[in-house]
Length: 214
Image (cartoon, rainbow, N blue to C red; front, side):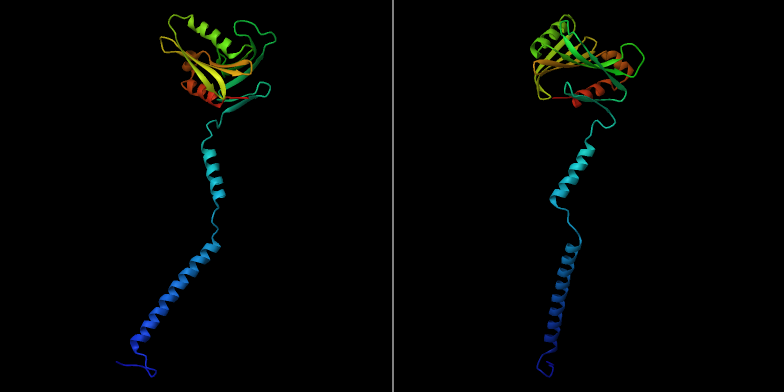
């Protein structure tokens, strides 16, 4: 076998060259990767969570384009479609079966009669008394079916009454205990409002969903 003057064979020299070449290539790749890691900033977990949160919040706003109503005195906030408007009705001397000291009437933007779409009333009696009075009133009908569900809604003790007529028309009535008073949200003129807009029940549901009581 042919060798150089110092006794190394050609094969040995080639092996050394190959090994040196491989080591150099691997070293360059490692250096290149480290350089990229230093120059390309990596988002922290907090930044990633913030971006995800902002994206989720922007995507989950169900009340975008709606009108906000707020009353600090009674601690009431809700949203309603822009096709509706609110009218406050203070009552100096509450009276009747369900004495009311303040009402927020929600109306459709129409000049026709019976424009009311919903009503939120502040009753002076407690939840048990007010709920029983409404149950008795609804129960006077021999044809309507009254469904009652009790529990907690909006963080308050509540009674939910659904009154269904034989023709399918219904009234949704939510009663909430707020201190020693009762806050009442109910649908109004349901069949007439459905004729005016097929979105009536969807809009009423959004109003209820957005309702906040302090």
